[in-house]
Length: 81
Image 1 (cartoon, helix red, strand yellow):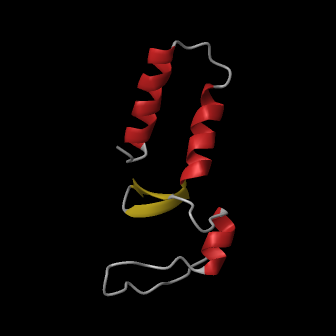
Image 2: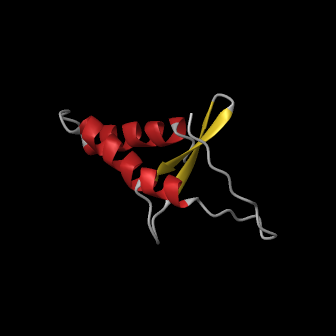
């Protein structure tokens, strides 16, 4: 298991260590998502999450409403409201 640490600032902010940013492909201006999974919180690159969702629907012939409903369900499952 790889581990990195960061200190919480007086304004409750953290800096992602360079090795974490590199591993996740995160750069200035990118958005991240914090997803609860069981007893832990996982940091995800929002672009990657969106790409996975879109790719998941690539082969489906869905109506707009079906797509939006499925998208909302996936975001809820990922803890993004």
